[in-house]
Length: 539
Image (cartoon, rainbow, N blue to C red):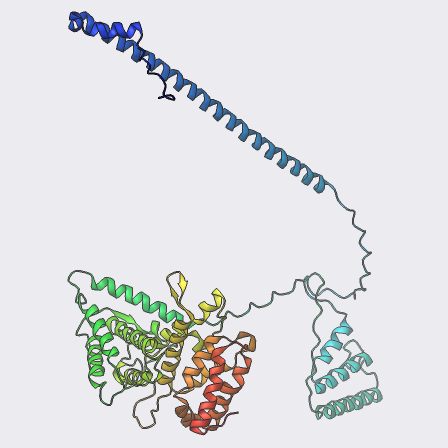
């Protein structure tokens, strides 16, 4: 082919040394000892060469690292020196500013002091008055009739009628004249005694200029929130009882947990059917009686720790001692906790479910055997209400701030707050439950109402009397749940006063809310429902 290159003969690229090495491999003495020793020596020499090269590289790297470290340290020292120099400069400026001063104007000359009245000494620290001044002060500080007597006596003394230093009368005429003067003086004194005595305002004694004023009395401390204290005491009681129930051989071991579970299950079975609550109610009452009568021994505890106000023993009533079994108080606390849980879980979406729970609550705390010194232990339940729904007790706070949410009982789920919908459901259930407990009619019962309707009125007033700048959406949610479904009982208790209160709550109070408050609008809607369905005109 015309374009193909001519074939080239391959050329050998091997050097004479390589050729010799290849040929030496074929020698007969390749396996001799000298041949192996030579190869080993060559390998060792190569190893030493590589090792020395590696050491040189490593030493060079170490030197470079040390150099870089020194440079970094030098840079840090320079930065430190610059910072110290800046601080020293600022300190110098500060000292210069402190050394400078602006001359102050001379103070005005002191005002001349008023002339002091010279008087006889009546003591080192006493206020001194002239003799005539003392008499005038005594006259002004006495009643009007006594002033007349003293003034006459003073005048008589000045005229010498009763002077002991005056010599006796030297003639019968002088004696008679003196006797007539005495009679006139006595007549004038008797005539002044007939004047009605009017208490004059006493003159305040003068005070030295350098006398220190007494410190103002300390302001009174705010009232202690007793329900919060009761809640803490209940927590301490629970911790103590749990610790005792875990002791080996304790009669409480295994019983405390079993009673707690049975009470929770029984409260969860409360329903609105007629006669449906007899069995769970009797079960709870039997457990409480067993703990109160000491069938399960437990240490006594002072009941005054769990009531809001001190109580005195009452004749012909059970449980007059200062202490009751701690297991009984603990189980009452479990009942209160179960009641609150049912209000939260069941009554937010269905407010009518609060009524059977309210009936059970009234029955439990009105039971005479479970009272202490003639009154119920419902303060334990109120302590729970106070913690979970402070709005019912007149507390206020903003829904938008951390502190405000804590004040109105907004719950946290871990580090974060629960959602607004969950909070509103909780508050609605608690408001309905509070109304179901406080609006119970005991007029046909021989028992005493443990939580009369006056508490409902106080809670309602505490909400609707809030200033416009302190209202919150939580208040409107709680207020609606307190009224909806319970307005007829409220009217039965208070009549026209209840109508006025409902007008204030459903018509006037929503006007204080911001424009975007949805819960406030629901109050206005409830007022319209009461007008159309119940014929109650509030607007």
